[in-house]
Length: 136
Image 1 (cartoon, rainbow, N blue to C red):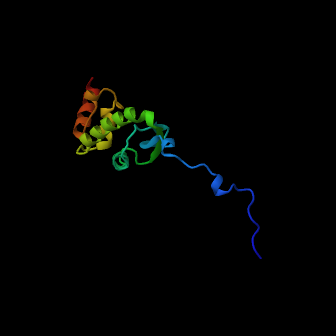
Image 2 (cartoon, rainbow, N blue to C red):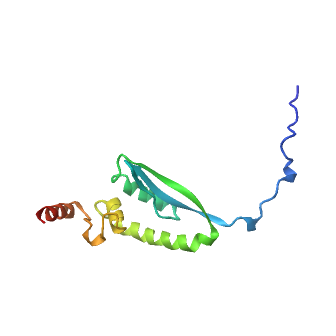
Image 3 (cartoon, helix red, strand yellow):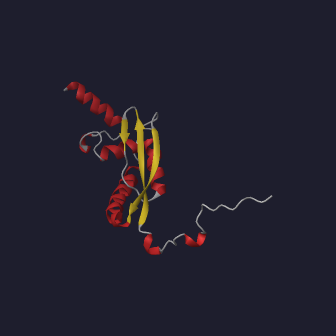
């Protein structure tokens, strides 16, 4: 016994072909964090490998958090702006790789803990910063 023919689906010959001119976008990534009411939406990064590296930098800073990489589709008209931002963050990620706490250092340089000059960069500086706050 044969199956009845599906008459509700359009024939393949009637589906419009996608032209190269119709494809006008690109993909970038954002590293996002959700933890105890904290919502950190990342900056655009064009390279998946770099987004994974940043996510791993954040893992010790947010041990109880939900960290994830969001894949975002953008229009080609946004490419120059997003590419420039992505390059800045690539340089920033490269510069904090050797820090004691690279995720913390990355966020400090972006101003998440106040002005960068006063942001502690390692454990020794954090202790000094806490002692100076107590003495004031």
